[in-house]
Amino acid sequence: MGTEQELAILFFDVVGSTQLYEKLGNDIARETVQHAVEQMKQATTENGGTVIKTMGDEVMATFGNVQDAMLAATAMQVMTHASNEVSERAVRVNIRIGCHYGHVVAENHDVFGAAVHTANRLTSQAKARQIVITADTAERLGVDWT
Image 1 (cartoon, helix red, strand yellow):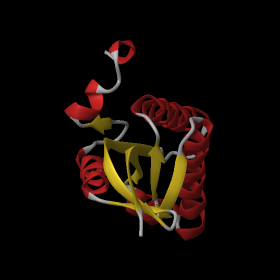
Image 2 (spheres, rainbow, N blue to C red):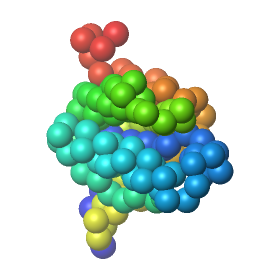
Image 3 (cartoon, one colour):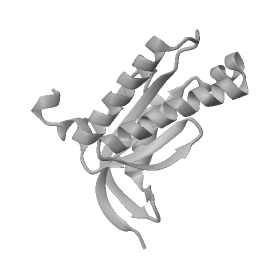
Image 4 (tube, rainbow, N blue to C red):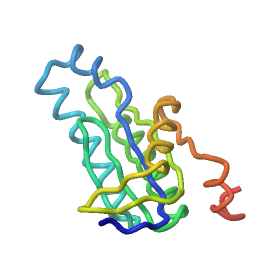
């Protein structure tokens, strides 16, 4: 039986990974996407989050509070942009991020619930280099973020 708790749920997704595979070929595209995923995982752990799972070019992570989640999301965007600046390849990697804070059920190193689905939907709505959050999540950020 899982435990119910409130967490910030983040989904991070590499934008246009299919096109990367078409342009770069399987080996280089896989390496490029994997590098971006590793950067996302690093930003998660450095900001107090837990990587729940990776699904190809997408990462799902949880944070105990919205502030840490937004610090990680911002760090991810900065790291990705910096990698693009020094990349010798003509193809740039961008990510999109969705975040929602809400009730989840944690069980067996995974989380379930409506908050997870909301965060995932927000990621689908985000464009490259965007972080999309719900109004309720934004209210939890406090004055330093407004």
